[in-house]
Length: 274
Length: 292
Image (spheres, rainbow over the protein chains, first blue to last red):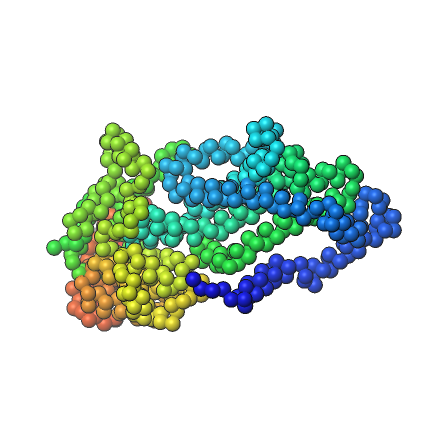
C-alpha cells in the first residue's frame, strides 16, 4: 500500500476548506452576512427588541464558551453525533444494496418496492410513540428514528439512479461478456453514484430532523435534550447555541458529501451520460 | 459456409397506450445469410429496424419469432407463444432474464463485438480503461492486455490520449475509442451501428480505410449499419436495403466492384444510381397509393 504523505493530506484539507468555507468568505456573501450580524447585535443592545427574547451574538458566543465549560456541551455534541451515525450507518448499509438490487432486477423490485412505497410516506416523527414503547428510551429508539429518516431517501435515490442507468452502457458491457455482478460493479454503481450521493445528502438533512425529535422526546442528553432543557429554564441563549451547533453538524456533513462528489468528479459523469 | 444465419426474424414491441395494447413491428420476417469474411451493409431510412436487427444479432434483445444462428448456434430463443409454455418460460426466467450472460462469471457465448451508434464508452473510465475493460471481460491475460489496448488505440489514432476521460474528448474521438475497444477483443464478427456518423469527413475516410485494411488482414465478418449510400458502396460486398414500418428487407444488392476501390469510380456511381432508384420508386409508390 502507498504511504500517504503529509503534503497530500494538506492538499486534500485545503481543497475541502476551499470548497466548504470558500462560499462563505466571499465578498458578496459578507456584504449580506455582516449587516445581519450588526443588526442582530444592535437591535437587542439598543432595546429596540426585548433583550430577554433575542440574545445578541456577543451573548451567544459567551454562552457557547460557558456551555462548553460548565454544561458539558461537547459531550452532548458527541452523544448526538454518536446517535446520528449509529442510525445513519445502518440505514446506508441497508438502503444502498437494497436500492441497487431493486433497480437491477424486476423480480426483486416487484416484491419489495410496494412495501417501501407504503411505509415511506409515514412521517418519521409519527413513529415516536411506538418506538418509545417498543425500544424504550435509549440509543435503540433514537438510532431507529434516525434510521427511518435516512433509509427512504437513500433507498429511493439509489433505486432511481440504478434503474436509470443507461441501457446502452449495460448492453455494451453485456455484449463483451460481463456477468451481472460485473455489470453492477463496473457499470451500474459508477453511473448511479451521483444519485446515491444525492440521496445521502437528503438523508443527512432528514436524519438530523429525526435526531432532534428523538432527543426531545426520549433522551436525557444530546443537543435535542439540551434544547428542551433550555426551554424549561427559559435560557434562550442556550437554545440558540444548541440550534447553531445542530446547524453546524448538518452543514459540515453536507459539505463533506459535496467534497466526495468533487473528488469522484461525479458532475462530469452526469454531463457525459446525461 | 455462413457464419450468421437469420431465419424469418421478427421483432414486435408492444406498447400500452391508455390501457390499450399497441404494437410496433420493428423487424418483420427478415432472412439473411452472411458468410465468413463478408462485409455487409444495411441501409435504409431511420426507423426501419436496422439497429434493432443488430441488437437481435448481438443477443441483446429477444426475438419475437424466428431465430439468429451464429456458427449454427442459436443466439436467443424466441419466447413460446403457447400460453402454458409461456408460463413455464416466465417461471424459468423469473429471476434471471434470458439475455443475461451469467450471474458471476464473465463469459460471452459468441465472438461478437459491436460499435454502438452513440459510442457508449463509459464516462467514468479513461480511454485506456475503457479498452482494458472489454479485454478483461474476454479473458485476455494481464500481461498482454495493456500492449494490445495501446496497439489498437494507436491504430485508431488515439496515442497520447490514453489517460483522458471521455468528457475531455471530442465526439469523433469517443467514437474512435469505441472502435478501438471493439477491435481490440479480436472478434470474429463485428457489428457496427453507424459508427462514423459523428465523425468529420476527413476522419471518416481515414477510419474507413483503416477498417478495410484490418478487415482484409484478419478474417473478420462485418455487418455495418449506415445512412450513407456512398459509404455502404465503398465498403461492402453486399448491401441490404431495408424499408420501414414494418422493417423488412426490400432488396439485397451485390457490389461486384473489385478491391481496392477508389472513391468516385464510375462503377460506384452506377451502383449508387441503382440504389437511389429503388428508394425513389418506393417513395413514388407511396404517393400513388395516396392519390388513389
